[in-house]
Length: 338
Image 1 (cartoon, rainbow, N blue to C red):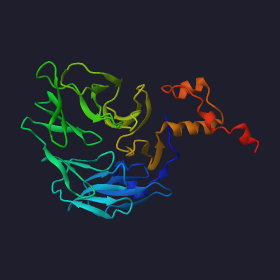
Image 2: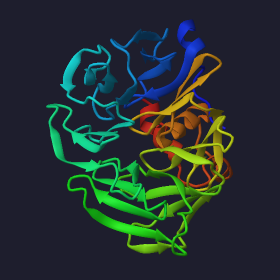
Image 3: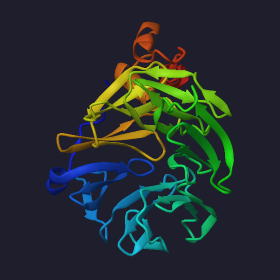
C-alpha cells in the first residue's frame, strides 16, 4: 500500500460538495466539480481555489501546456492555468460528451451527437474531417488514442469493433465477435498511454489486450486479472486505475503483476496529465502521490541510508531487476574526506 505525504486540507465549501476531481499535467493544479460549478485549485499550504468564470459542463486539462478546455454557455473556451484568462474561443454550439487534448497538446478532440471533431487549440481551426457519430448501424465511439490519430467505434449491435483514422475517418482495421452475430465479449475500452496505441478492455474481471488486426475476436491476450473497468493508465504503462464492480472504489494496480497497490474512494482520485502523479482526496484533504519509480527509490534510500538488500528489493520492487540503486546516491571516499 502506498501513501503520499500527509494530505493538505481542502477548503470546507469545496470538500462538502466535491463530486469528482481531475488533474493538470503535473498534479500541481486540479479541478473539482462542486454542486454543478467547477473550481480550480492549486496544491500548496494552504490549498487555494477559485471558481471558473462561467458555468462549465465539460472540462479537460492540456497534458503539455498550462491551459484547460472548458465548455461554457457561450461555447468551447481555451483558458490559461492558473489565471483562467481567455486564450481562444472555439465555435462549438453543441455540448460535447467527450473532451481530450492530444499528448503533445497540439490538438483537441471534441465528441458530440454529430460526431468527432479535431481542433487546433491555438487557432480554433478544425483539422481534417468531422467523423460522423453513426454510420446507420448504431455505431458509437468508445475510445480515442492519446495522440488523437485513431478512434475506436463499436457498431452492428455490438458485434463489430473498428479502428478508424481521425484525419480521414477511414477504416484501419476491424474485428468481429465469434461466433457470428455474437456480441463483443469486452467492454471499458481505453488506450495505453505509452505511445504504443495498444487498446485494452475488460472481459468479466480480466483486463485484456485487444489486437489491432482484421480478425475474429474469439481469443486475445490476457493482460491481468480482477478489475471491474479501466479508468486510466499511467504514461509508462506500469500502473492503471481500475474501478471496482460495485462502483464505490478505485484501485491502483501494477500492470506487470496484477497486484493491487492501493484502493481509494471512487471519484476522489485523478491521474496527472503526464501519468506520473496521483491526486487523492481522503477525509477532506488532498494528497499528491508520485508514481515515478525513481522517486520511490530515492525515498527508500533516504529512509534506510544504505543500499537495499536483495531480499528487501524482492519485497518492495518485485517486478524490477535488482540493482544497487542507493550506491549511486552514496558519497565517494574522496567526497567524504574533503
